[in-house]
Image (cartoon, rainbow, N blue to C red):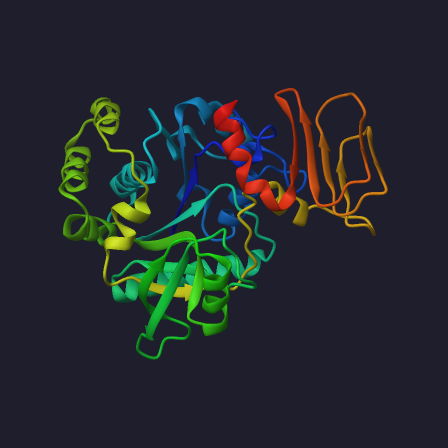
Length: 344
């Protein structure tokens, strides 16, 4: 089995901690290792190091080399520019297939997600690989919702497949819902959170792209397969900017899905970061050596500079101080940080 770690994005909802030049997967958010390093450690429990690839954009590649010294440079796929996840993953898949052929399952995982139950993560991906080989179909991994979240897209499962444990056809995809709709999804038991994980052999991905994606993607894939290494960058720059969800996954009618047997968190905003950070009896978290929190509840303070930060009489807020800026946000509005970043 081959693991492709997708290490892109800017993590704008975690500004000013995450910035475009140094996004969240490169940061130590949940411990003494970065999110990327933790993802790499999980991948090593699924397969050997020579079967782990990282796809990243050119501006971040040196950081990847530094953080993952076990990987050879041939295993780090550098995108010449940001073009969305469809170009990123399509490009990486055909590079992997050149070395390992068309038949071995390839799992696409994100570099910036927080997983604690590593054993369950390993077992789930190995099971998905087995099923994708057996049925020659793309297998998704959905996360059982533990509440009516409005932050994620959803996968609706359909009928079970043969007698396989927990394996279902995919009925449809749902965009991020309002709270009432999310509650209905939760109560029905028919929906997973869409974590963006999928597994299949390269020949299955190639077949589905040729059958169901727009002609642009089929032509670009053919160009990549026939290109010399020197021509790849120019082809990549001709790609449309589109996520793989809309370009391929949501157009493929024979998807399968299994539930994740592990906890999962996107760590996409500061309310998520606070949740995975140790808290005191007042549910406050303090990261940094010169923070003071008085008469406050459910506050997350992170101070990246050598100066004091004091928070007094506040509830449900995050206060972030870094050399790149200062953020004070009500945690339930953390999703709006990206709107401030646009204005900045």
